[in-house]
Structures are given as structure tokens and as C-alpha cells.
Image 1 (tube, rainbow, N blue to C red):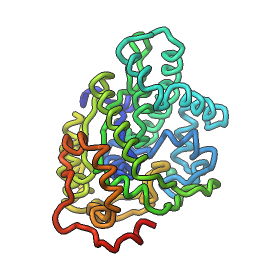
Image 2 (image 1 turned 60 degrees about the horizontal axis):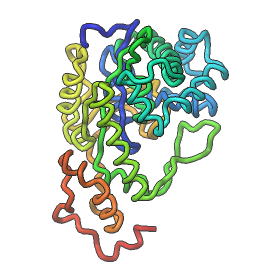
Image 3 (image 1 turned 180 degrees about the horizontal axis):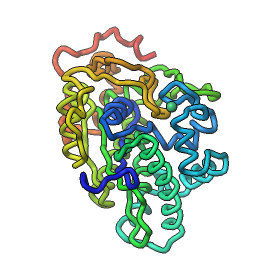
Image 4 (image 1 turned 135 degrees about the vertical axis):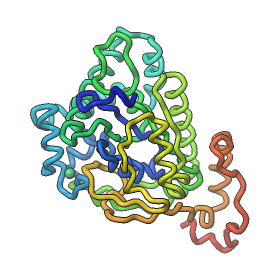
Length: 345
Ligand SMILES: [Zn+2]
């Protein structure tokens, strides 16, 4: 794969996984490799970034950012309501979770002349224009897309048997985090989104049981995308990324078979990374932190997660905990105080 990527046919590294798993961090680390560029959660471009004039990672409004203006001009002769409404509409047709079984069938050569196949081709054509324009604007051969959703990634990554080719290649990185940590993060109070532009809604919170069920469904989909749809998929644990970022990223890039120039990971230390502003869109508020960033695992959940929530999530995700090397039982010394009820509020 390392020989075939080019500015005119870039390789897309698609970060698939559940929210609050460190995808914004990984996306920015990868996007800082020379010859690589990160675009944030591109799936949000038609559905929130453009309609609400959200902030780009560079601090400019999307519509004022010179980088994205150049990309829009190159891809579509300029961004327009029509172009983005068309992509948003196609997403509802082809890239929702309920469409995963049909997309898997399509990826295996089923229903090649179907309406779904036609719409997937149109979706890939639209995103292909954006990916290639991004690669040209950045002088990059690898585009890192942190959109996260498996269905969207599958729709963009599957190969249609009789199509003209996508004009890009796509592989997935399944970034996983201990589902107890994920559930705890989602259960906490709402987080402001500094990029939200004209949309004042904060990031929302969800219950532990719902988070666990969604996490399990998502991991099942990621596994099927790798094994059934034939989209190359690598898994990386958030805990390994923050504990040993340099080793984790090096292994990941080698595993993806992508070019890594000499000194390409100079920004990744043993326990910290140095990140400049990028043009990544949407995602976690940490997108707007720059400079040297010390990394450490966010393990507050081990101490503060209510025991009942912990049991619910552990039970619902047990096969994956075992498969991914997450201890089901509570480590010694992290028992919560019996008076910690107030933290459930
Ligand atoms: Zn920008």
C-alpha cells in the first residue's frame, strides 16, 4: 500500500470507534506526520459544521478558513448549500447503523445493480472529491478522518465490484477504550463545545447501560467490517496510546503499511506529544489545545464510577473486555468509598 498512495489517489485512515475514546488526540497525532493531514470528523461537515458555521481547528469559522475554502473550490467549485445537503441526504440513505447489514452484503458482491449500490457510489464520489482536494491543498498522500461511525466508514470504504473506483483507498483504525471508562465519561455532566458556532447545544450525556449496549454494537460492527467487508482494520487501545504514545503510533503506522518519513514522529515523545493547530473539524474540545501536551490515562472512572453502573457495563461487554485485555474485576486499591453516593448525582 505504501507504494500506491499519492496526492491524486490518497489513502484515508478512518478512525472508527465510540465517542470519548481519544479519537481527536489520535487524529491530530497522525495528522502531524509529514505528508499526512487530519480533517477531523468529516461526517459532521454536512450535518453540523457547515450549517452552523462551526469553528475549524485553526480557530477560524469553517466558512472563513482559507484551507477549507481552497478545498471546497477544488472539490465542487465552492461550498454550497446544495452540495452539502446532497451529501447529508445520501448519508441518511446509505450510512446509518441500520444499513450495515445491506452494506456488508454489497461489499461481498451482493445486489451490485441495486439502488443502494448507486447511492453508495454517489456518496463515495462526493467524499472522494473532498479527500483528493484535501490531499492536494495539504500536499499530503494520507488523509486522517476521525468520523468514527462504522456505517459511514463502511459506506466510504467498501469496494463496489463494477464501479469506476473510488479515487482513494481506505483502511480503518478501530480505537477502543475500556467501555467502563467510556460509559463513565458519557454519564458525566455535559461538556461545552467551543467550536459550536451558531448551535448552542452542548455535547450530550447518556446512561451507562445505553452506552454499554451501543459500545458493544459498535465493536461488533467494526469486527464485521474487517472480517466480512474486507476493509483493512487495525485495532489500537486508547490506554496504550496514552501510556506509550510513541511506541503505539509507530506500531500502528507500520501495521497500516503506510509511508513514514525519517523524523516523521518527532512530535511524539514517550509520554507527551507536541501538536500545532490543524484544520480538523468537530470532535472533542481538546482540539483547541496546542503545544506540548502531557498524556496520561483518564482513569477517574476506576475510583468514581458507581458500582451499579460498573457492573452493568462489565456484564454487557464481558467478551470484549476479555478479548482486548481489560481486567473485568476492579484493580486493588481502587474500591470506591461507601459514602460516594453523592457522586451519582
Ligand atoms: Zn482551518
